[in-house]
Length: 210
Image (cartoon, rainbow, N blue to C red; front, side, top):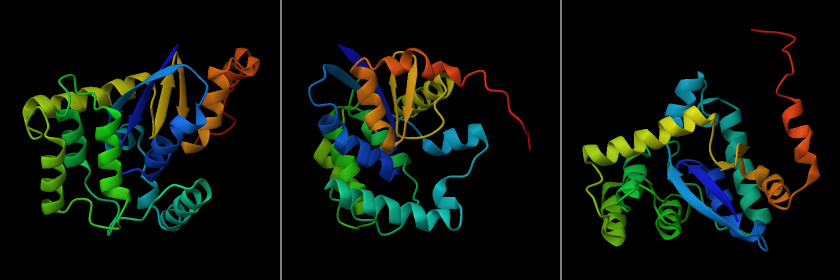
């Protein structure tokens, strides 16, 4: 059995799509999953990047594409009332729902759908209070312990080479993005391509630096 670490941020529609489709895509394979919330903004800052929703043109394309992908794959998805938003409250709530800071699938599903179903404001205080009561976290979401656990997840992801969400880590391999799910399935199936081609790009020298 392979173990998958699923690095996610509820702000990411691609994380939501990957979360919803993962069980279907991996049907027939034996695997387990650990869900690890991370702060996407911290990944961007570490790598000196802007998020797709911060770049004019790319922002609009991203929203159109995720709506199309949801339509194409039969996933219920409506854009929240505003995006991007500050996801810290949701990330900390997810971490607070487990003693080790590792939310189960129900918790992640509840929080993803809080954002991506209904077209409402994800950071609305009344809605946050309602979803907190629904999940009944084991720890106070605003505690220093929970904040430290979320930071630890994010630092671990950065150390592992994660640069975006969703990223699904298996063995020493990172699969980034919703569109990487078929590639992940092939790896779990033992596709021989991974024995050579995977590492072949690691030594590619850059022809230009800016």
